[in-house]
Length: 343
Image (cartoon, rainbow, N blue to C red):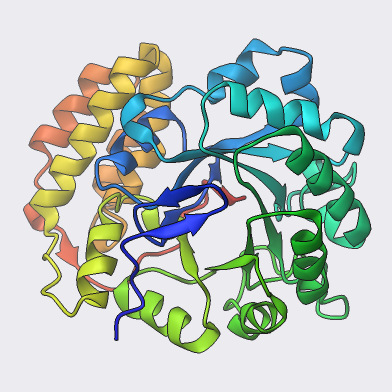
């Protein structure tokens, strides 16, 4: 029996499937989402935005929330710990046309946690409930929350927060199987996700952490009993990963993605970036994006070095089209790239 669901209810809406793409700070921008939407994940997210910036009408923040109609279903993700503005911020997300709104209680970086936001909220579970309740009261779209297992191994409170989120009216909770202290090091502990599934009554539980292909997605479903999986860094350079996961779960042949396919994907990503950003930003962004698409291949150092020196989109285009990728050796599973915070 497959764990893949063609339709999954999330509050008042029905999503096309239960394989979701995570928000990645500094990575899941508009061009990234253009690539992702082509393969139709059950739900995708914009990068997280700060509640404070949103309610004071910061235009750069609104720019981060740009999306096209072909990106639905799409959710906005809020970061902040001020219950008094949470409802207003959620309503802005709803008014912008998003299908759902998520509260970030998982980001581990110091600049976010220092004011009690992100995974800093794991230290104040009741505040999470208060913030969520205010969001739920303010909007009609589903409200969700993303957390980590706990602040550290001595403070594992994901099951408690699952119960609190459910009581606050949240439609789903995503559990990242690492603690804040771990950041992105070491394996995700899926026991924490399993424990949240055990206490959940009505709230949907989304598993997150080390889902990099169909086999790992299947293992997470089977081990934890979660309702959906959230693919994070596995989406980087593999916007088609949902197709691979679904094919695997349906016991169908998984399409082989060779180096030419990755070159084509990188070229398409480049063109989306070129359409959206100014030339200098395009060149800078493609330095990391170019590494994503060839991160499984050995012998890419020359390509990485060349693209990191590119100063203009024309140079990037030339590299993508003409670099001899046939000299690369396809190997291994994706390496972690030092360019994203999973939020």
